[in-house]
Image (cartoon, helix red, strand yellow):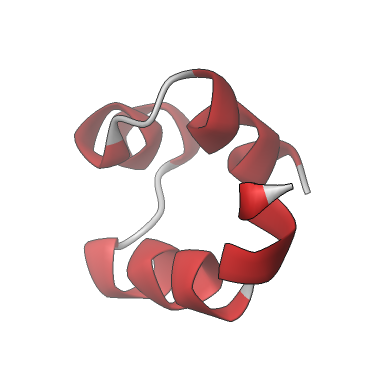
Length: 40
């Protein structure tokens, strides 16, 4: 998922919200769900 890769490169939730038009709660849920993947 492109949003998660972007978060790994530049962990700015606010910036990702603006660029991709994603709600804060949705983004937070994705990050929680994929936290194991992001740590690798």
